[in-house]
Image (tube, rainbow, N blue to C red; front, top):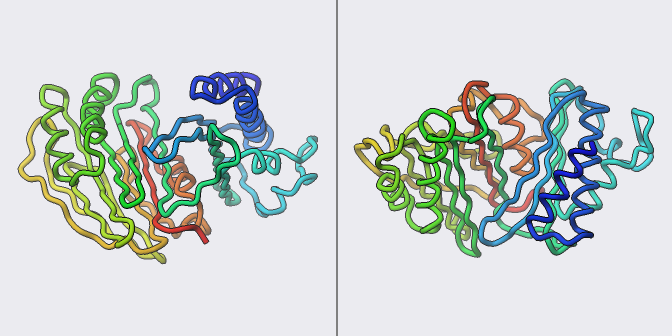
Length: 321
């Protein structure tokens, strides 16, 4: 727990948090790490900086495959404990975080999300929520996948890219694509992919997809090359999003965008092929109503193929119920 706290505090300071704010992050990391050890036995604590051009925040997530909780609300109550502790951990974490969510199922495990802004007390009130779970293949220090998100008052754009193979050369290829996205984040998806194709020439190449949402109308333009999976989910139904065959930076026959309607409270999921393709939100009661960061982490936890880099990006249009 001490190592988790020290690392989280140092990272928060690097991200611009003052002493008080970094201390807040340290308490959150300590409490979540303690829960992983005491209740789950093992798990992953992830600290990452998120910047979509509209909001910047530090996210701390705890992901485990432990026994789960039969009554999440009761476990959030101060004074309740199943271990020899004061029982104030999750309640304290919820109060310290600017944004908080939790999803837990008996026999499947628990995911806890906490987000904090550099200026404390600022809570998100947005038409688009999003989250991402991204990690390198076991044994690699560089992740060959990449992602980007850009949000303003009228638009939200998302990219997931997978450099061929894994390791540093795959990561380099992916960076060329994410640089193309960053240069024109709210441009047409086809244009972003064309620029990615040009920038990735001479690299290993890769596959990628871009989704661009008009927030007011709910119209989604989606373009992909290769096997990045995309889907829209709403009220128990799902619709796959279309990509063309090819390899960015190497050879592709066609760039084409397809239009879809993104329903209010609908969920977009995009992921690399490090995730198995057969999954369903319906298998997880309550998950579709959770924060997209929880959805992304849960799918990344349970459907990881175990032999590749993993990226899952999830987003929701409209406020959670």
